[in-house]
Length: 248
Ligand code: NAP
Image (cartoon, rainbow, N blue to C red; front, top):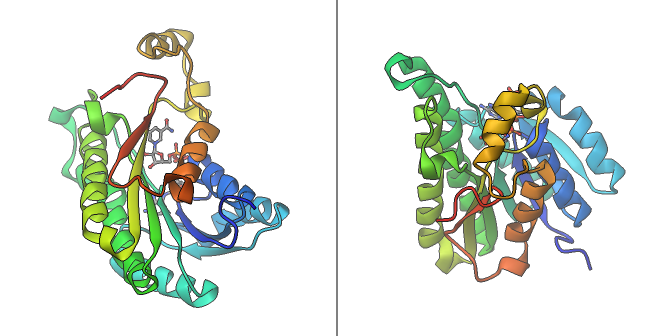
């Protein structure tokens, strides 16, 4: 039997990138998908790919930083699928700049989407999971949240917050049969890394012991493990996926 047979999974920020890769991996392992992103119509490609794997996919336009949209979206998902087994809080943005020049607006935007968005989704979905007495959260943090990085004060702080929120979620909900873990990706190969100059690319690779960037699939494989019963006794952890860059 596939690892996630019969499970209902919600993935935020599923239109592209790592979120799309996570949705496809969960579908491959037998889950049906509630796909969410800021606009529902951005999700048509992911929906088609999930359906091509023989799984059900519905799309939801939800800005995770808006409490009313999150509540309405999660309520609708529960209505459409009848349960929520897995929530992957993947939606996230960067607005980089040195601390001295960072605007209050860019600080708030990153915090509201990356950290508050994870809180709002967790709060809304856990109400249903508590009634079921089962559920799993996998939150997408970052190695930057573990080690800091010049130019990423807002992003690093938001992702450190995600790791810590994961610990509290795990401790508060463990007795109800709900687990929460986070993944902390390092440099993952995306359109962004493809566009780097050789010099920047070499500088980035020099700090990675494995001397290679990760792939979106490296993240989605670990998310799948944490979403499944294979990790039954794991909760409150942040697992780095970074080629050995961060070892703590
Ligand atoms: P991406 O390609 O930009 O995808 C992020 C998705 O989230 C986009 O579809 C984006 O939509 C969506 N999103 C943005 N704001 C949202 C909101 N308010 N509500 C709902 N969805 C929203 O990024 P990615 O590289 O795949 O990153 C996915 C996650 O991994 C993020 O949390 C990121 O911080 C984390 N991460 C990535 C890396 C990396 O190397 N790529 C490393 C560590 C951690 P838009 O089109 O509006 O932007």
